[in-house]
Every structure is written in structure tokens, then in C-alpha cells.
Length: 309
Image 1 (cartoon, rainbow, N blue to C red):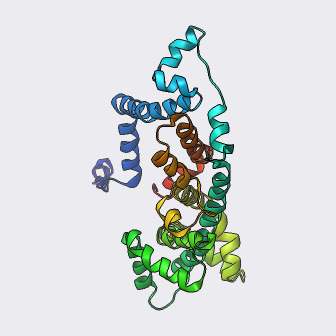
Image 2: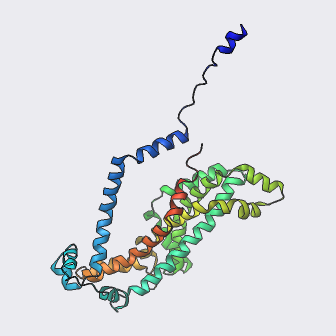
Image 3: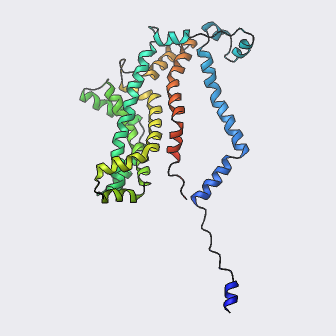
């Protein structure tokens, strides 16, 4: 009897439904499909062609721009007739009627604090929501999350009125505070989710060693948030750098960033394509450099914590 029981195979344990790792493998297989790869390449080309055309146009003399399209430069280059010049960039940056160099500096002055301020505030708020137990925490977190759906346009007039009452309208502070307020709900939500993925055993071990909230935050939590901080910093940098509405309403001639001046060129000097193309490429070169140089951290920030198993 014991021999028969020994020969009887053990009943199979039912396999649980698809796990995160199974879904990740299926997604990877789908994305590695030749058709998906071909489609991605086609989309990338369609997105890149206008940028190439803008770059080529920005280096062409004004007369050539008016006589032929930018794609003709390749045939002219093969024939030895291509002519490129930096004159458009010199006019756009340093000519008295455009003076994009000043607005270029203003863009950095506006963007860097508008990225740094919400990150600092959101880190503290996210840590409180994630690891500090207080009454009404869940309700307050839901309220902060719900602020993401509030349109920016309906807040501009109340904010501008408050800035006028405080006497700070038309300064860099109005732009910094506005961008920081608009970015905080997303920043808190994103960083909170990353903090909740940190194993509680790490935090508890630090507390058992006598660490307080400040030491836990700086020595345990903050070093693990590099991907999340990089992802949000890139989002915020690109949004603030490319912003036109907030800067135009909250700023003045001394605080306007590059986007405002390029928009004026498109409206008042739309016929000067040689200057407009150079100015447009000047305004987009910094976001391109930032995104391409930090792309690795950006992808890590988006994928960190999304697949477990």
C-alpha cells in the first residue's frame, strides 16, 4: 500500500493568475515584435524630420530660405553649392531688435528655482504622507492628489490678484511661486508612491538604531529616490522652460523668458524666417540636451517599482 502511495504523483498546485513578472515578459515580447519596432522607427522619423528641417533652415542665408526649401541643401551640398552661415544666430542673439541672449538667461533664472522649490517641498510632504502617522492623513493626501485636475487657467486671476496685493507682481517670485504651486500635487503624488515602495524594514531598522525622522529621511529615504527625483525634475524642467502662459501673465519685460520673445518674433516678424528659425532652435536646444543627457535616469524613474516578482 505504501508503494502505491509513493508512486502516486502529488497533486499539482494550481498556478496563480498572471503575475507582474509574467505581464512584464509579455509586454517585452510585444514590444520586441518586428512590426512594433518598425512602427516605432517610422514614428521617430516623422518626429525628427521637422527638427532637422528647422536646424538646416536656421543655418541658411535669408535669400536661400526664400528661394527654396530646406531639403534642397542636400543636393546643393553634393554639387558643392551649399552655403551655411552663423549669421542667423548672431542676429537672433545679439541684434538690438531681438536680443534673445537676455531672454535666454531669463529662462534659466525662471526654470532652475521653479524646479528646485517644488522638489524640496514635495520631498518633505511625501515623507510625511508615507511614514508619519497623523489624523486625517489619507483624506489630506486625496485632496492633494485631486488638485491635479484643477485647470491652471482658472487660478491665474486669483493668483495675480494676490501677488498685486502683496506687492510682488511682475517679479521672478511670482513666476517661481506659480510654477511651484502648479507642480506640487504631481510631485507629492509621485514621490509618495516611490517612498511607499521602500521596504518598511529599512525604516524600522533605522528607528531601532535611534534615528529620528530627519536621519531616516536623509540617510535612508533620500538616497533611494534618485530615479524619482530625476524623472520629476525632467518633467518640471521641460514644462517650465517651454511655458508661455504663466510667464506672459505673471512676468514683465525684465522677467520674460525665451518663449515669450520667440512668440513675439512669430507674431510680429513672421516673415523673417531666418531669425525665427534660429530663435526657435535656440529655445529648444536646452530641453533637448537635458532630456538626452538625463534619459537614463528618466527611464529608471518611470520604471522603478513598476515590476516586482
